[in-house]
Amino acid sequence: MVEDLVIIGSGPAGYTAAIYAGRAQLKPVVFEGFSAGGIPGGQLMTTTEVENYPGFAEGVQGPKLMQQMRQQALRWGARLITDDVIAVDFTQYPFLIASADLLEVKARAVIICTGATAKRLHLPGEEKFWNNGISACAICDGANPLFANADIAVVGGGDSAVEEALYLTKYASKVHLLVRSDRLRASKTMQERIFNHSQFHIHWHSLPISVDGDEVLRSVQIRDTQTGGVADLTVSGLFYAIGHTPNTQLFQDQLELDEAGYIKTQGKSTATNIPGIWAAGDVQDHVYRQAITAAGTGCMAALEAERWLSERQLSPADGTPTLVSFAA
Ligand SMILES: Cc1cc2nc3c(=O)[nH]c(=O)nc-3n(C[C@H](O)[C@H](O)[C@H](O)COP(=O)(O)OP(=O)(O)OC[C@H]3O[C@@H](n4cnc5c(N)ncnc54)[C@H](O)[C@@H]3O)c2cc1C
Image 1: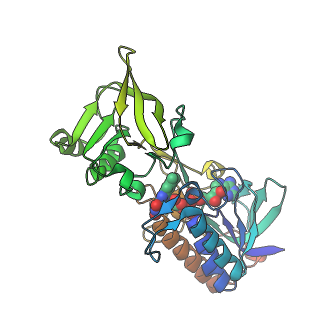
Image 2: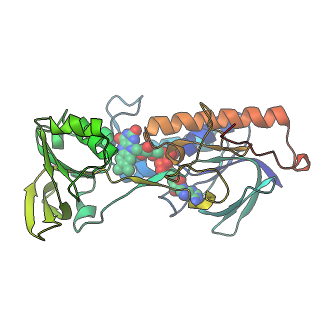
Image 3: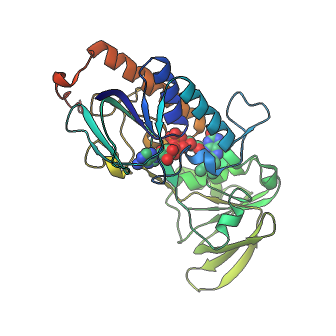
Protein backbone atom coordinates (compact mmCIF):
# COMPACT_ATOMS: atom_id res chain seq x y z
CA MET A 1 0.00 0.00 0.00
CA VAL A 2 1.46 3.34 -1.04
CA GLU A 3 0.16 6.52 0.59
CA ASP A 4 -0.23 9.67 -1.48
CA LEU A 5 1.13 11.97 1.20
CA VAL A 6 2.96 11.61 4.48
CA ILE A 7 3.44 14.65 6.71
CA ILE A 8 6.14 14.50 9.38
CA GLY A 9 5.52 16.81 12.35
CA SER A 10 2.46 18.28 14.05
CA GLY A 11 3.16 21.93 14.80
CA PRO A 12 1.28 24.72 13.00
CA ALA A 13 3.03 23.76 9.75
CA GLY A 14 2.18 20.05 9.92
CA TYR A 15 -1.45 20.47 10.95
CA THR A 16 -2.06 23.21 8.38
CA ALA A 17 -0.56 21.02 5.66
CA ALA A 18 -2.82 18.20 6.91
CA ILE A 19 -5.93 20.41 6.77
CA TYR A 20 -5.23 21.51 3.19
CA ALA A 21 -4.19 18.05 2.02
CA GLY A 22 -7.22 16.52 3.76
CA ARG A 23 -9.54 18.94 2.01
CA ALA A 24 -7.85 17.97 -1.27
CA GLN A 25 -8.85 14.37 -0.47
CA LEU A 26 -5.28 13.14 -0.15
CA LYS A 27 -6.06 11.44 3.20
CA PRO A 28 -2.63 12.42 4.55
CA VAL A 29 -0.84 10.27 7.09
CA VAL A 30 0.62 12.56 9.76
CA PHE A 31 3.41 11.42 12.04
CA GLU A 32 2.75 13.75 14.95
CA GLY A 33 5.97 12.88 16.74
CA PHE A 34 6.23 11.73 20.31
CA SER A 35 9.44 12.98 21.90
CA ALA A 36 11.97 13.62 19.13
CA GLY A 37 12.31 17.33 18.35
CA GLY A 38 9.51 18.39 20.70
CA ILE A 39 6.09 17.03 21.55
CA PRO A 40 2.95 16.47 19.47
CA GLY A 41 1.54 19.90 18.74
CA GLY A 42 5.02 21.44 18.59
CA GLN A 43 6.56 24.46 20.26
CA LEU A 44 3.29 26.23 21.09
CA MET A 45 2.46 23.39 23.49
CA THR A 46 5.20 24.82 25.73
CA THR A 47 3.79 28.32 25.96
CA THR A 48 0.80 29.97 27.58
CA GLU A 49 -0.79 32.98 25.89
CA VAL A 50 -0.38 33.42 22.12
CA GLU A 51 -1.30 37.02 21.39
CA ASN A 52 -0.33 37.40 17.74
CA TYR A 53 -2.07 34.54 15.94
CA PRO A 54 -4.77 36.17 13.79
CA GLY A 55 -8.37 35.37 14.61
CA PHE A 56 -8.04 35.46 18.39
CA ALA A 57 -8.71 39.03 19.45
CA GLU A 58 -8.24 38.20 23.13
CA GLY A 59 -5.30 35.84 22.57
CA VAL A 60 -5.38 32.05 22.86
CA GLN A 61 -3.50 29.51 24.95
CA GLY A 62 -0.83 27.74 22.86
CA PRO A 63 -2.07 24.19 23.67
CA LYS A 64 -5.69 25.22 22.93
CA LEU A 65 -4.69 26.61 19.53
CA MET A 66 -2.85 23.41 18.67
CA GLN A 67 -5.75 21.27 19.86
CA GLN A 68 -8.06 23.22 17.53
CA MET A 69 -5.68 22.72 14.58
CA ARG A 70 -5.49 18.99 15.36
CA GLN A 71 -9.28 18.68 15.47
CA GLN A 72 -9.54 20.54 12.17
CA ALA A 73 -7.02 18.17 10.56
CA LEU A 74 -8.96 15.15 11.84
CA ARG A 75 -12.20 16.63 10.56
CA TRP A 76 -10.75 16.69 7.05
CA GLY A 77 -9.63 13.09 7.13
CA ALA A 78 -6.00 13.29 8.25
CA ARG A 79 -4.79 10.04 9.77
CA LEU A 80 -2.72 10.93 12.82
CA ILE A 81 -0.03 8.66 14.21
CA THR A 82 1.51 9.76 17.53
CA ASP A 83 4.97 8.40 16.90
CA ASP A 84 8.46 9.61 16.00
CA VAL A 85 9.85 9.02 12.56
CA ILE A 86 13.25 7.43 13.13
CA ALA A 87 14.41 6.77 9.55
CA VAL A 88 13.62 7.84 6.02
CA ASP A 89 14.87 6.61 2.67
CA PHE A 90 14.43 9.24 0.00
CA THR A 91 16.75 7.44 -2.42
CA GLN A 92 14.01 4.97 -3.28
CA TYR A 93 10.62 5.77 -4.79
CA PRO A 94 8.01 5.64 -3.40
CA PHE A 95 9.76 7.17 -0.41
CA LEU A 96 10.10 5.08 2.72
CA ILE A 97 9.34 6.40 6.21
CA ALA A 98 9.89 4.31 9.33
CA SER A 99 8.67 5.12 12.82
CA ALA A 100 9.83 4.20 16.32
CA ASP A 101 6.92 1.75 16.69
CA LEU A 102 8.30 -0.05 13.64
CA LEU A 103 5.66 1.23 11.28
CA GLU A 104 6.90 1.49 7.69
CA VAL A 105 5.01 3.66 5.26
CA LYS A 106 5.65 4.20 1.57
CA ALA A 107 4.65 7.58 0.18
CA ARG A 108 4.44 9.26 -3.20
CA ALA A 109 4.96 12.65 -1.57
CA VAL A 110 6.30 13.84 1.78
CA ILE A 111 6.02 17.15 3.64
CA ILE A 112 8.56 17.70 6.39
CA CYS A 113 7.42 19.93 9.28
CA THR A 114 9.69 18.82 12.12
CA GLY A 115 10.34 22.35 13.38
CA ALA A 116 13.27 23.58 15.38
CA THR A 117 14.22 23.58 19.03
CA ALA A 118 15.23 26.78 20.81
CA LYS A 119 18.50 26.23 22.64
CA ARG A 120 18.26 26.55 26.39
CA LEU A 121 20.88 27.03 29.09
CA HIS A 122 19.27 24.56 31.53
CA LEU A 123 20.01 26.84 34.48
CA PRO A 124 18.92 25.87 37.98
CA GLY A 125 15.41 27.35 38.34
CA GLU A 126 14.86 27.63 34.56
CA GLU A 127 11.89 25.26 34.39
CA LYS A 128 10.05 27.14 37.15
CA PHE A 129 10.35 30.50 35.42
CA TRP A 130 9.90 29.35 31.82
CA ASN A 131 6.97 31.50 30.58
CA ASN A 132 7.09 33.37 33.91
CA GLY A 133 9.98 35.61 33.01
CA ILE A 134 12.17 33.38 30.86
CA SER A 135 11.51 33.16 27.13
CA ALA A 136 13.27 32.22 23.92
CA CYS A 137 11.24 34.54 21.67
CA ALA A 138 11.23 38.34 22.01
CA ILE A 139 8.66 38.84 19.26
CA CYS A 140 6.30 36.32 20.88
CA ASP A 141 6.65 37.42 24.49
CA GLY A 142 8.13 40.94 24.55
CA ALA A 143 4.75 42.64 24.97
CA ASN A 144 3.95 40.62 28.10
CA PRO A 145 3.03 43.11 30.89
CA LEU A 146 5.72 41.44 33.03
CA PHE A 147 8.35 43.28 31.02
CA ALA A 148 6.70 46.70 30.71
CA ASN A 149 9.12 49.41 31.88
CA ALA A 150 11.21 46.78 33.63
CA ASP A 151 14.88 45.77 33.48
CA ILE A 152 15.35 42.63 31.43
CA ALA A 153 18.35 40.61 30.26
CA VAL A 154 19.16 39.01 26.91
CA VAL A 155 21.74 36.25 26.61
CA GLY A 156 23.76 36.03 23.40
CA GLY A 157 26.16 37.95 21.23
CA GLY A 158 25.12 37.25 17.64
CA ASP A 159 22.96 39.19 15.20
CA SER A 160 19.73 37.65 16.46
CA ALA A 161 20.60 38.44 20.10
CA VAL A 162 21.18 42.09 19.22
CA GLU A 163 18.05 42.18 17.07
CA GLU A 164 15.93 40.66 19.86
CA ALA A 165 17.49 43.02 22.41
CA LEU A 166 16.70 46.04 20.22
CA TYR A 167 13.14 44.83 19.77
CA LEU A 168 12.72 44.55 23.55
CA THR A 169 13.61 48.21 24.09
CA LYS A 170 10.05 48.96 22.92
CA TYR A 171 8.76 47.51 26.18
CA ALA A 172 11.55 47.36 28.75
CA SER A 173 13.15 50.38 30.36
CA LYS A 174 16.59 48.81 30.27
CA VAL A 175 18.03 45.83 28.39
CA HIS A 176 21.09 44.08 29.82
CA LEU A 177 22.94 42.16 27.15
CA LEU A 178 24.91 39.29 28.70
CA VAL A 179 27.89 38.45 26.52
CA ARG A 180 30.20 35.56 27.30
CA SER A 181 33.36 37.09 25.86
CA ASP A 182 34.71 40.58 25.26
CA ARG A 183 33.11 41.05 21.85
CA LEU A 184 29.87 40.63 19.93
CA ARG A 185 29.56 38.31 16.94
CA ALA A 186 26.85 40.57 15.52
CA SER A 187 27.57 42.62 12.42
CA LYS A 188 29.20 46.05 12.81
CA THR A 189 25.97 47.79 11.81
CA MET A 190 24.00 45.95 14.48
CA GLN A 191 26.68 46.66 17.05
CA GLU A 192 26.61 50.38 16.33
CA ARG A 193 22.86 50.40 16.90
CA ILE A 194 23.24 49.21 20.47
CA PHE A 195 26.51 50.93 21.39
CA ASN A 196 24.73 54.24 20.83
CA HIS A 197 21.50 53.26 22.52
CA SER A 198 20.70 54.73 25.94
CA GLN A 199 18.59 51.75 27.06
CA PHE A 200 21.43 49.22 26.77
CA HIS A 201 23.93 47.95 29.24
CA ILE A 202 26.36 45.39 27.90
CA HIS A 203 27.88 43.01 30.45
CA TRP A 204 31.06 41.54 28.94
CA HIS A 205 32.49 38.20 30.16
CA SER A 206 29.12 37.42 31.70
CA LEU A 207 27.53 34.02 32.03
CA PRO A 208 24.15 33.43 33.69
CA ILE A 209 24.43 30.57 36.15
CA SER A 210 21.05 30.48 37.92
CA VAL A 211 17.73 32.30 38.20
CA ASP A 212 15.60 33.23 41.18
CA GLY A 213 12.21 34.74 41.99
CA ASP A 214 8.85 34.01 43.56
CA GLU A 215 5.87 33.40 41.21
CA VAL A 216 7.85 35.18 38.52
CA LEU A 217 11.50 35.75 37.74
CA ARG A 218 13.16 38.43 39.85
CA SER A 219 16.91 38.01 39.34
CA VAL A 220 19.67 36.29 37.43
CA GLN A 221 22.95 35.25 38.95
CA ILE A 222 25.88 36.03 36.70
CA ARG A 223 29.42 34.74 36.79
CA ASP A 224 32.28 36.83 35.46
CA THR A 225 34.07 34.43 33.09
CA GLN A 226 37.43 36.16 33.78
CA THR A 227 37.45 36.64 37.53
CA GLY A 228 34.96 33.94 38.55
CA GLY A 229 33.13 36.53 40.65
CA VAL A 230 29.37 36.10 41.01
CA ALA A 231 26.78 38.90 41.12
CA ASP A 232 22.99 39.19 41.18
CA LEU A 233 21.25 41.18 38.46
CA THR A 234 17.70 42.26 39.28
CA VAL A 235 15.57 41.69 36.18
CA SER A 236 11.98 40.74 35.36
CA GLY A 237 12.86 38.96 32.16
CA LEU A 238 15.56 36.73 30.72
CA PHE A 239 15.52 36.10 26.98
CA TYR A 240 17.62 33.37 25.43
CA ALA A 241 18.97 34.36 22.03
CA ILE A 242 21.52 31.60 21.72
CA GLY A 243 20.12 29.99 18.59
CA HIS A 244 17.86 27.19 17.47
CA THR A 245 18.58 23.65 16.39
CA PRO A 246 16.53 22.61 13.35
CA ASN A 247 15.15 19.09 13.76
CA THR A 248 16.85 17.75 10.66
CA GLN A 249 19.19 15.04 11.95
CA LEU A 250 17.03 12.46 10.15
CA PHE A 251 17.50 14.14 6.80
CA GLN A 252 21.20 14.98 6.98
CA ASP A 253 22.37 12.58 4.30
CA GLN A 254 19.17 12.72 2.30
CA LEU A 255 18.29 16.34 1.60
CA GLU A 256 20.22 19.53 0.92
CA LEU A 257 20.59 21.49 4.16
CA ASP A 258 22.17 24.90 4.70
CA GLU A 259 25.26 25.40 6.86
CA ALA A 260 23.12 25.77 10.00
CA GLY A 261 21.25 22.53 9.24
CA TYR A 262 17.96 24.01 7.97
CA ILE A 263 16.36 22.32 4.96
CA LYS A 264 16.96 24.35 1.80
CA THR A 265 13.84 25.21 -0.16
CA GLN A 266 13.67 26.62 -3.65
CA GLY A 267 12.84 30.26 -4.23
CA LYS A 268 9.31 31.14 -3.25
CA SER A 269 8.20 27.54 -2.95
CA THR A 270 8.60 24.95 -0.23
CA ALA A 271 10.15 22.40 -2.61
CA THR A 272 13.34 20.70 -1.45
CA ASN A 273 16.04 19.41 -3.80
CA ILE A 274 14.13 16.12 -4.17
CA PRO A 275 10.96 16.36 -6.26
CA GLY A 276 8.07 14.99 -4.24
CA ILE A 277 9.43 16.29 -0.93
CA TRP A 278 8.54 19.67 0.59
CA ALA A 279 9.56 21.35 3.83
CA ALA A 280 7.46 23.84 5.79
CA GLY A 281 7.71 25.81 9.02
CA ASP A 282 10.70 26.39 11.26
CA VAL A 283 12.59 23.42 9.84
CA GLN A 284 13.30 25.56 6.76
CA ASP A 285 13.00 29.05 8.26
CA HIS A 286 15.57 30.63 10.51
CA VAL A 287 14.31 34.15 9.85
CA TYR A 288 10.66 34.51 10.87
CA ARG A 289 10.03 31.50 13.14
CA GLN A 290 6.41 32.33 13.94
CA ALA A 291 3.30 30.16 14.15
CA ILE A 292 1.59 32.08 11.37
CA THR A 293 4.55 31.76 8.98
CA ALA A 294 4.82 28.06 9.82
CA ALA A 295 1.11 27.62 9.08
CA GLY A 296 1.48 29.68 5.88
CA THR A 297 4.28 27.52 4.54
CA GLY A 298 2.38 24.38 5.61
CA CYS A 299 -0.46 25.57 3.39
CA MET A 300 1.97 26.24 0.52
CA ALA A 301 3.54 22.79 0.84
CA ALA A 302 0.17 21.02 0.76
CA LEU A 303 -0.96 22.99 -2.31
CA GLU A 304 2.33 22.30 -4.08
CA ALA A 305 2.18 18.59 -3.19
CA GLU A 306 -1.40 18.28 -4.36
CA ARG A 307 -0.60 19.98 -7.67
CA TRP A 308 2.52 17.86 -8.17
CA LEU A 309 0.68 14.61 -7.46
CA SER A 310 -2.25 15.41 -9.71
CA GLU A 311 -0.04 16.63 -12.57
CA ARG A 312 2.01 13.48 -12.55
CA GLN A 313 -0.52 10.90 -11.42
CA LEU A 314 2.52 9.17 -9.93
CA SER A 315 2.51 5.51 -9.17
CA PRO A 316 5.37 3.31 -7.86
CA ALA A 317 6.06 2.19 -11.42
CA ASP A 318 6.96 5.75 -12.44
CA GLY A 319 10.38 5.43 -10.84
CA THR A 320 12.46 7.86 -8.82
CA PRO A 321 12.06 11.54 -9.69
CA THR A 322 15.29 13.20 -10.81
CA LEU A 323 17.18 15.36 -8.32
CA VAL A 324 17.31 19.09 -8.92
CA SER A 325 20.26 21.26 -8.05
CA PHE A 326 20.02 24.57 -6.19
CA ALA A 327 22.98 25.84 -8.15
CA ALA A 328 20.93 25.66 -11.37
C1 LIG B 1 7.99 29.19 24.26
C2 LIG B 1 7.61 29.60 22.84
C3 LIG B 1 6.65 30.55 22.65
C4 LIG B 1 6.28 30.93 21.37
N1 LIG B 1 5.31 31.85 21.22
C5 LIG B 1 4.91 32.20 19.98
C6 LIG B 1 3.87 33.14 19.80
O1 LIG B 1 3.34 33.71 20.77
N2 LIG B 1 3.51 33.43 18.53
C7 LIG B 1 4.09 32.85 17.44
O2 LIG B 1 3.69 33.14 16.32
N3 LIG B 1 5.09 31.96 17.59
C8 LIG B 1 5.51 31.62 18.83
N4 LIG B 1 6.53 30.75 18.98
C9 LIG B 1 7.17 30.19 17.78
C10 LIG B 1 6.27 29.08 17.20
O3 LIG B 1 5.93 28.18 18.22
C11 LIG B 1 6.99 28.36 16.07
O4 LIG B 1 7.39 29.28 15.09
C12 LIG B 1 6.08 27.32 15.44
O5 LIG B 1 5.59 26.41 16.41
C13 LIG B 1 6.80 26.54 14.35
O6 LIG B 1 5.91 25.60 13.87
P1 LIG B 1 6.39 24.29 13.10
O7 LIG B 1 5.16 23.60 12.69
O8 LIG B 1 7.37 24.65 12.06
O9 LIG B 1 7.22 23.43 14.15
P2 LIG B 1 7.05 23.04 15.67
O10 LIG B 1 6.00 23.79 16.35
O11 LIG B 1 8.44 23.09 16.21
O12 LIG B 1 6.59 21.53 15.60
C14 LIG B 1 7.45 20.54 15.14
C15 LIG B 1 6.74 19.21 15.22
O13 LIG B 1 7.53 18.21 14.63
C16 LIG B 1 7.48 17.06 15.44
N5 LIG B 1 8.68 16.28 15.18
C17 LIG B 1 9.99 16.66 15.31
N6 LIG B 1 10.80 15.63 14.98
C18 LIG B 1 9.97 14.61 14.61
C19 LIG B 1 10.20 13.26 14.17
N7 LIG B 1 11.42 12.74 14.05
N8 LIG B 1 9.13 12.49 13.89
C20 LIG B 1 7.85 12.98 13.99
N9 LIG B 1 7.58 14.24 14.39
C21 LIG B 1 8.64 15.02 14.72
C22 LIG B 1 7.38 17.59 16.86
O14 LIG B 1 6.84 16.63 17.73
C23 LIG B 1 6.43 18.75 16.64
O15 LIG B 1 5.13 18.28 16.65
C24 LIG B 1 6.93 30.34 20.25
C25 LIG B 1 7.91 29.38 20.44
C26 LIG B 1 8.27 29.00 21.72
C27 LIG B 1 9.34 27.95 21.93
